[in-house]
Image (tube, rainbow, N blue to C red; front, side, top):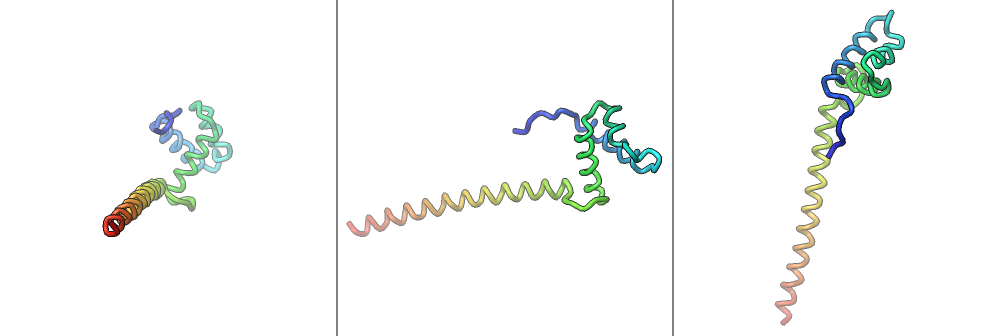
Length: 106
């Protein structure tokens, strides 16, 4: 289970939007993340990470979008489950094959 969030999703979205807007204006772009973080009581590195993810999601920065990462995680989980099921099936097939051979010998 995921740990509880320190900041709400609404605060995260609002802070990201404010920081991106502040960075668009050349006069306020320098130190925008630190300034917005201080205004909202957020750790600057947390806001910097949110802004980075927002830029990737908007296509302004190269990287894997949040939706793509979620899909990749789901597929990796599914692959793990399928491999585990495959291993169980192989083991059970070997067990029953050995049992069948024992019956034929007797």
